[in-house]
Image (cartoon, rainbow, N blue to C red; front, top):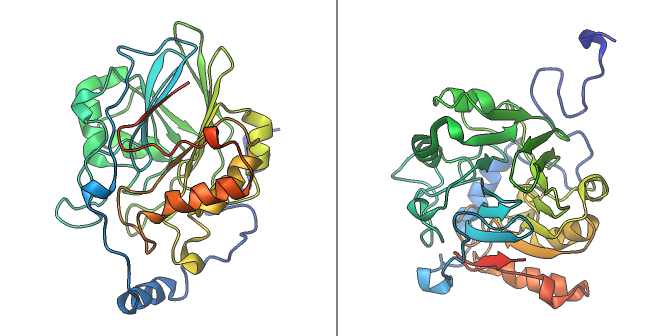
Length: 338
């Protein structure tokens, strides 16, 4: 069958943009004045204050240098969706963000509550970067530029479709993998290749006024040659596809799932899951392994109390009857070693 007659994947729209291919559990309210309604409601609602740095505990990272042994997993929370992943004998970064603000401007926009849990200059040698999507709290141009200046073409970049063009505009043209959902990239390592598969998520992309959904969004499943698995959820609303991800790419020793940026629910639900939904997604993925919450306690993006997400996650975990020792709410700079 020639390419022109090959069936288009459901998440590829006929206009060349990407789309969510399944029914939403909560209707998308962004169109038709939804953004204006949200901003109007914010003007008249009382919100919890921003936390001070002392409200957010910090830890000294426990990093393996130069790398962890092949059968070990070390995960260090830098903040928000940024982790240092040490597994399969390689060092990787997820959605690396080390700037003070999650914004296209250095002088305004969401500002960090506390510095990164691990400074950019204190990283071990990095082998690869995983980018889930193009929003400013996940794709930080300044950090990307510093990583490229440090490593040049030796660094591997893996991101959903469309991000290669953005990276190329910043001089990053080699070792870039622009991947669709279910595509796998294998990175060579001393203990055998590390397989990284881009998986679905329920989100959207926009980095400019005219770039709505021009780039794909996704999550990532990582599998070492020894069979150890890690799932990085990126940024997503809850959807019923987590069961399929678990069946196709699990089981997972660690699941990193977003738990913040969820209020007001009528507006945020399609793109951001709340803590209860994150625990539900963990159970859909197989309900085993360490659960590491992320996407909270770093930037104020939405209306909930910034310190509320881990409290609700702990209660949802307890209500689900899940093993207490498998929930790991890391402080900034905290490291989970398996």
